[in-house]
Length: 228
Image 1 (tube, rainbow, N blue to C red):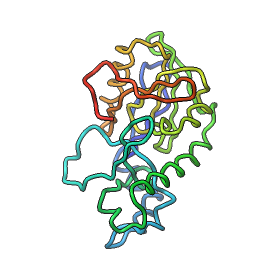
Image 2: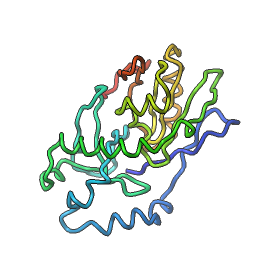
Image 3: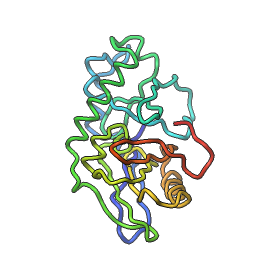
Image 4: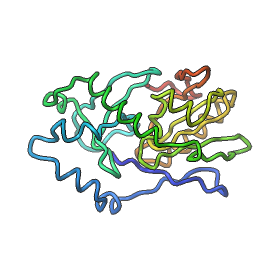
């Protein structure tokens, strides 16, 4: 599952651009190092535990048969999958992996959240880009390591990066988290989300996330309900 890192916004444009391609994925040394750990039985847990990350499932189905993903529902009430961070891509964790690992689904989630927390602590408010789209103020965060969307699983990360003031977050891509005013028109928030989703083959399809009083809650966008 490619991370499909989005470029930093160009202030002359109204949207981010999604970049990436087979060459930079194939030639990445971190991916090659990860693949060298793969044997006939897959990955051993001790080889990948430090690189397991929570990931949101992509909206578009794969074009080839795949095993069912390992999924769990985590606060704020969103379905989360998992991947092994291999540099430019996440190697998807499926249910058969758990059969050979000494952890259950809850243990996998605990490890993934701990790994995410360590990475999130390296991000700083200076990594945010504040701009405007159609006269609506937006604050954009990209980790450049593929996990920005899953910051909504860590209220402490949202508070440290964006502050305690209320806001509405949308996460159209794995490495893209956008804060809008809490009272933004939902039609606009939905349009903006779908613009980014349309540009990314690995786009997500999540609801929005309402942030206030130190708590994140799912908030439906103005479109047909989606599974979160």
